[in-house]
Image 1 (cartoon, rainbow, N blue to C red):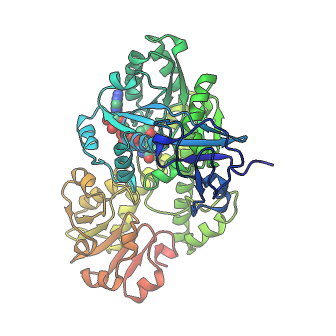
Image 2: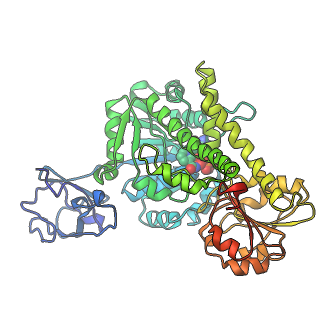
Image 3: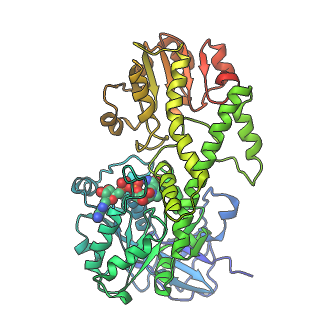
Length: 524
Ligand code: NAD
């Protein structure tokens, strides 16, 4: 039978952790005289399958051999051992780099984030996190204070002696062409080549085309001996808005590795996740790169599929929410990503779907399904503007339209490829005066939406408007006092592109309520 103590435990006071000793009969809840450790069960609130003995941790650390900077203990096969902590460099302190860096530091590793944008580095050094992501500021500050997370603009100083250097720079769409722009990844590879001394694992975390790892390897090998480094693919699957939870308790970690030494380093880096039951999937490098694209494109396809079913529901008088529920209960299909709306946006789906179509076409294996979904999704945003115009009686010329929500989804301030960036200018082009409010996205949205009046809160936004439009489903919009909303509006028209309000209640209040895919014309 497996030892119930097996797992990884985080010590609170790292300077006095005893490692590599075998406590005889140590059991949770009892002091162990040999090590003076006392254990306490932690209730985690996690799902049953993830609860259990793995969540015990040392509560008190007594006398013993001082082992500074070893905050993790592993108990396996009757032995306590320290988890090897890694020196990690994260190139790029954007969304993925910053979240990954902070989480890896929180696992106990020593992380240096290298970022070209000096303003970002200054801001981070002063404890100001430049993006909005729930819990991220707290995590960054805590790990900075513990000395495990630092920021710099210089890879030269940070890179030497690193066990692993992660590349987490952007891979945007190349204008006109649509394939991934690899400029930043290749620049990072060239910089890495100049700092490698001892064996270093180069981890490509950015989303990159299949075969990109080979190119990174080739670039580094121009300057560094091949036996001093190994290139690994480790794509990131975090969702903005839930990024920390996703990183720390992922559905899976995918590692594309073909070098045994690199595999061991990666295993140590992700040991805390593995010990908590997170599946680690080891594949070839190319398969790992493909997994990332295939996963994103599949999810984008689900969104696009339900959007088209929603349109059909509006024609035929069915309710898409019932349909989503009815098909989603089939676990071959699953309920998630079946919420109709104004089309997908964000920093990943649009560029990754496009990049895969280019990649497939170049490989002479075009994926027509994905080509179509890119086209359908692009047109949907314009169609949503037309839907708003229709709900306003066929014209918005001279009308004041209140837009609630601008970011591509809630709980982020990210405006990359947000549907609002198409819908709002379309409304303006049709003669509307747009007033908008977003709980966290105003700072990022303002420079992107010229001619828009921005309000400080939802009610101010709605005041005197000829129609309200929900573009992003922030929780605070769900909780609005709908009677007050109606009283604030000049005309009681609500176009809800996220289906957040109950049709019956809206009708009872006297709204003209138009949503997506719920009965004829989306009107219930
Ligand atoms: P981002 O634009 O927010 O961050 C990239 C950062 O890298 C920027 O701060 C930029 O200044 C910095 N940078 C560029 N070149 C550099 C260099 N040579 N040295 C140091 N810093 C450099 O991008 P992101 O959203 O974090 O995405 C990064 C990668 O991760 C992309 O490939 C993306 O597709 C992928 N990804 C993103 C998400 C997401 O939700 N944002 C999720 C999964 C995967």
